[in-house]
Image 1 (spheres, rainbow over the protein chains, first blue to last red):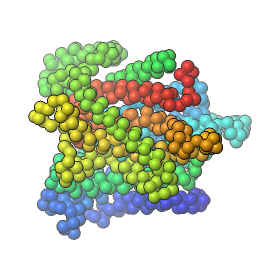
Image 2: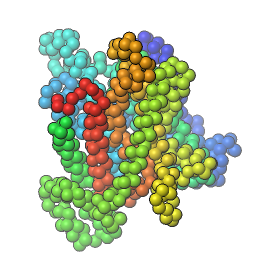
Image 3: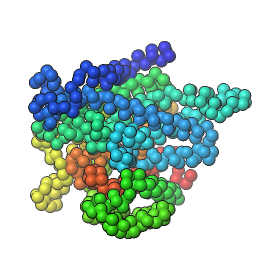
Image 4: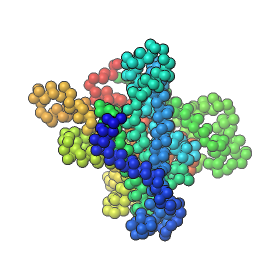
Length: 279
Length: 323
């Protein structure tokens, strides 16, 4: 573990990424407490330009709502959706990949055809359809992002399990009569984890992009303000008020960039051999 | 070669069939009775009309039979009827498809050419300032949401500089013909295509760079160098050709993302393609149209994947078609 932090802190991208992520988490957790302006309430005249009033540093939108407050509260939604949907995707993808890799043969064939099928479906289009049909809410958004992002996890885990299955220590566990579940959970998966962690950090970034795109198209949770929603709402008035679209977009850019950098740092720290795009 | 193509086409048709079945069940997930939903779309929800609809679409029949009717309809290119737009779904899609193909193919060509070019440069000058600059730019483009890039493009090139039109496919009411019409469309195409292409360009840049650096170290490159071949020939014929293989694979994997990006790009730029059609269907909760566009998008991805598979076999000298 110490070794891991050492190499993680040695890679500049990892450090920058960690700093950005910590900052984003701090804002998401404590920001709304320190900054009590509700993002939905009118606080000033509409279209107030940024940097004119200290109380509303980033100006107001077309309805006089505080852009800065929206960005603070939006951080919660983005990070929450990013993290939870990635977790769900891991919960779906890891068992499928592990079973396919461990049992091989027909099980592998069937599970991999199933995975490939989900990989061929245009993911964003499927996510749009799912959210539209299930009605937009934080649950349907998390579910649809998870549905479109688990296949790479399954494929990655399958590959790892395939190569670990024939190792001697696994054979030894088989000989001592351990159950399949025990072998997969205790012997194989812990050793297959590092590439999964790298992939997961990149998946959180992709999930944040997906969530913002859905919200931009009007498929966000109507009760929660999010960065994508703000950009979408500012879109029609971009000629009069650039700040409404520019600032939330910068927030998305920085968080996604931070997570990608973390992915790169983790990759350098955990598996120096694996290339970044090799999934 | 032929048997390979046939095999892949059969596989593609099976996948498409599975997608159609998935579609069938998806629409049944929508809240409410489909007949009531359709009646609502048509703007009249009295009992008689709902009953008529139920009979017309076989919704009073058992589920397997309904599925059969649905699949049969799609096999004969009947994608249903859009009550909102008062037109068959297949006709609406056919009208919009050329614009989407123009946009996605242009974006794809731009991203692949620029991506491979920048990636090659970065690998060639690895460790220098140029490499760092390209890598940082690629990272940033990779992290920008497409809809935001589109809006920033409009802000910069339409609002501030007034160089490019911010929406549409051609100048409305200009009635241009021939060459001037083509120029007009091209002007409208630049921003959407660049917007859509930038994200993928960043991916291809990173991939090409990593892959070139990997191939460069291999023994056959040393052999080529030992033979006394010029650096340019080694880079082009030996390194680049082999380094392109993973890039081609990635292009295939990305075709679905490209379609998804087109939905956003077309929405922002009011580009009259099927992505925009999907957005309109979404706003109006026009499920027939939504599902129709989805099936066509999936078919496009399958076709694109088949093409990349063929290209892969052409580029990679080690794979033969017979196998």
